[in-house]
Length: 484
Image 1 (spheres, rainbow, N blue to C red):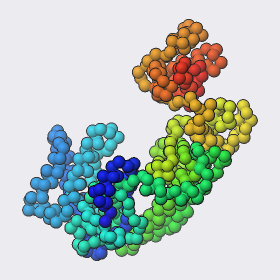
Image 2: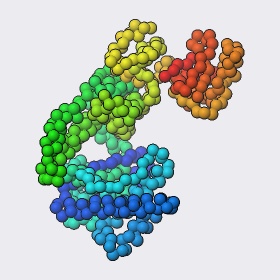
Image 3: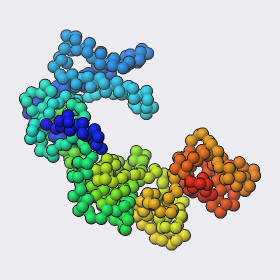
Image 4: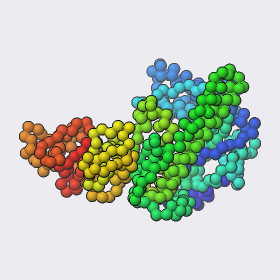
C-alpha cells in the first residue's frame, strides 16, 4: 500500500516536500477493458450533453452558476432514459461536469481561452476514477467497482510518499492503458537517492550556463571549460519509416482491419520516438545537475519560434520546453538551483571576454563564428552565448550591480542628482522619469527615458525598449545604459 501511516504523515508536514506525478502501465483483462471503455463512453456522453445544454443557456443570456452542471447531471441520472449512468462510477461522470465548468470559468478570466468543443471517439482518451490501494508487491492496483479484485500493473519502480488524493486518471493511448496519480514525497529522500550520482560526478561546478540549439542540443559552459551535447534528432531518424507506414495506410479503407493495424504501428512508432526523447532529456538533465550547484538556462519563446516553418520541425524534435521543465523540477532533488535569463537577453551578440562590453548590431544564424572588433577575440557563437548566460549569475564586478528592468506606464522621479546633471547637459529636454529606486534591486519599468551617454556628452532617448541599467545602492542610476 502506498499510503503511509498517519504518524508519519504528521512528520512529513514539518519537512521539505515535493509533489511527484507517477505514471504506470496497466495490464487489464478483457472484462476490465470493457469496463474502462464504458467509462470513456459515459464521460464523453456527459460532456457533450452538458455542453449542448450550456450553449443553449448562454444563447438565451442565462449564466452558468457554480455547481449547476453537477446538479443537472444528478437530475439527468434520475430519468429512466439515462438511468444507465448509474452503472458508471460517479467520479467519472461528475469529473466531466466539473471540467466543463472550469473551462467556462477560464473563458472569463483568460482572453485567449477558446470555447469548449464536442468530444469524439479518438484513439487517445482519459477519465478519472476512485482507487483504493496497491497490493503489497506493487504488482496490482484496486480500482472502484472494477471487475476482479485487482488490475495488474506492469513492472516499475516502487513508489514513495503520501497520496494527495484518492483519484487517479486512467489514460487510453492507442491500445494501451495507463494510470497517473500524484504523491507528496520528502525532498530529503530524493536527495539521498541521488547522492551517489553526485559523488560519481566528482567536483561540482559552482555555476553552469546552458545554451540550447539545433546543431548541438545543448552547449554547457562550466567553471573551467565548455562542452557540447549532440542533438539526437529522434524524429528525423524515424521519419522515413513513418512516411512508409503512412503511405501504406493511405491505400487502405478507413474502416478496414488493415487500416486499424497500420494505425497502431504508426502510433507505436510515435510513442517510441516520444519516449526516446524524454529519456534523453532525463539523462542529460541528471548529468548536468549532478555536476553543478547552480544551473542557468536561456528563456526561449518556443511558440513564437515554431512559426518559422523552416525550423519548426527541428525545434519541435529537440523538445526544449520539456528539457527546461525537467531541469526546473529536478534541481531541488540534487540540492541545486535553477534560473532562467531574460527572454530578450542578447547572449549571442555580446562579447563574453571579461572587461569587454561590445555588442554586435546584427548576427545572422548562418554566422557560427565571429571576431570581436574591440578585443579581437574569436568566438564560437554557441559557446559565447553559454558563457554570457553563465555570467548573468556569476558574482564578478561586471555583473554584481546589473539588474534587468522593464517599465510600466506609471512614472516616478529620477534622483535629484541625475536630474540636475541631465538638465545641465541638455536645457531643452527634461529627462523622462523612472520609478524611484528604493534600493538597487527594485525592478523598474520605463516607457521612454533620456539617459546620459557613455561619455556623458549629452542625453540619448530610449523608447519602448528593455534597458540593462547599472545600479548603485547609494547613488542610484549611474551614467551608463545599454540596449538589449
